Length: 315
Image 1 (cartoon, helix red, strand yellow):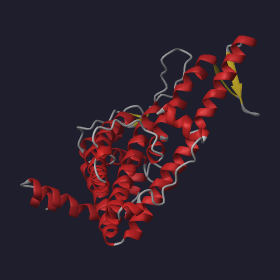
Image 2 (tube, rainbow, N blue to C red; image 1 turned 45 degrees about the horizontal axis):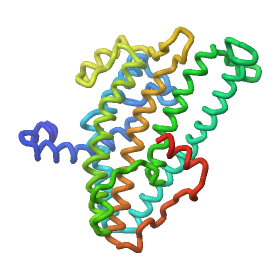
Image 3 (cartoon, rainbow, N blue to C red; image 1 turned 90 degrees about the vertical axis):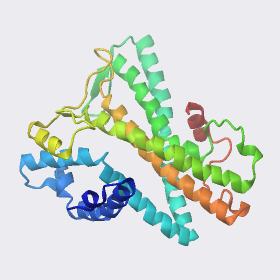
Image 4 (cartoon, rainbow, N blue to C red; image 1 turned 30 degrees about the vertical axis):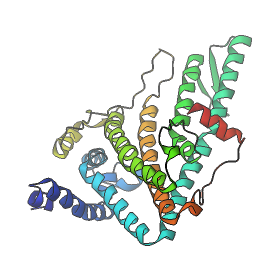
């Protein structure tokens, strides 16, 4: 009998049973990747097709499961405890997480320039040459209707919003409504930041992930997985499993890769969750070390940086 079955009679028992089992689940997943990653070409080897389909269903199930939540929570708990003991370690975590947010945002911010250039090309080709299709490429040409390229601009905008969200947060570019924050003391501000990151950012990211995860996979495979399905039911569905990537657009010749927006939604929530952790750590360290540590190791773009201004305006 597992710990969850043995201790699950009350809320505290259920919580701690899952937390303890999370370490076993993490170790088992790392030591048996073929059971949930066999659907990837470089892992499956010569496994039977049925087992490959079952591994994909396990991946879908555990991606938004209670077990996965407690594995992530256990990792966070261990890192946080080490960070409470060592300020240097926690500052290292802050620098890595904020560096990742900045790097991701600065990279995908170039989608704004690409969006502008593509819009110029579309207008020029339509108004000057009156073409109905635009093709790009050397040797192998990728050709689509003009309406396809026009609707694709939405995807660039979505990339900037989703992939630059934590970059904008680190840079302090989000719009804020301040009713109390500016009037309180330094340490009270840090307490507000810590509470806000854990009580607002983290739950919002988790809820969005839980809905977005199955929303994504319902547009990638059939039979459609559901959040209410048990693992045994999904394994049963695996017998009829096949890829069915969404390719339906809003117009006959329009952009038909809308499944990418679902991918962005899931990626967005993961970035927000990581930034919530980074913000909590930074707020705790600034609270602990005092005003002298405010903005410590903060990699902010110079005032007037066109990239930062463009992303801030979109957000």
